[in-house]
Length: 264
Image (cartoon, rainbow, N blue to C red):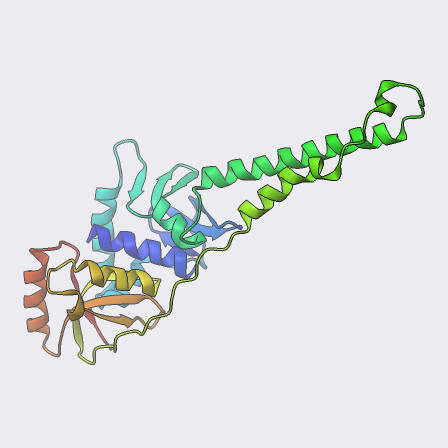
């Protein structure tokens, strides 16, 4: 179940831009490129992850809170940090984003946050360099002396000044390749569905099915949307709850994070 909670936190940040973690605090997405910030205060307008667990897992609020506490016991490290796989590491007043979440927020070609910050600082140095060079050229051209060596030297060309900046701009604005659109398999019409994954991006749900985590064949999974817009990967569907639970126990022998999704 710990991996399921990690995925729900991941999907809340990608889909809604925030998530509330009881007993920990809140995570929110801001800025461009998008970054995730942590606050020990839980905002009223942030979505509690336990509510998402109850709604999409078809379980009671009490059961969702129990499962969340089990996850928290595993996620909390000896030094007090909280490690959410695929999401990041929560420390007091700090959040270190995982590369998987960074790619989901900023695109497949997104650079790590540290690299983006270094590149932003690099832009500042380029601007300062251009100002200094431009000031030197202006002083050169305005020099009143008619006999000194500086005035007799050849005037520098414009390309010498602007060429590095043009190269940097080209490097920054190359767009990420758009994901090709593919048809979505039809949603199951059964009441009880054994799920193996939930994703905010349809592409990631299809990738999960292709990986065939249960060994039943990629073509035997069905991808269907949650009412909230998230995408769930279904391995088995039935109208009988006992049958669904039986298959869940069988699949759980292969993969730990398998649960029954009940359609309303």
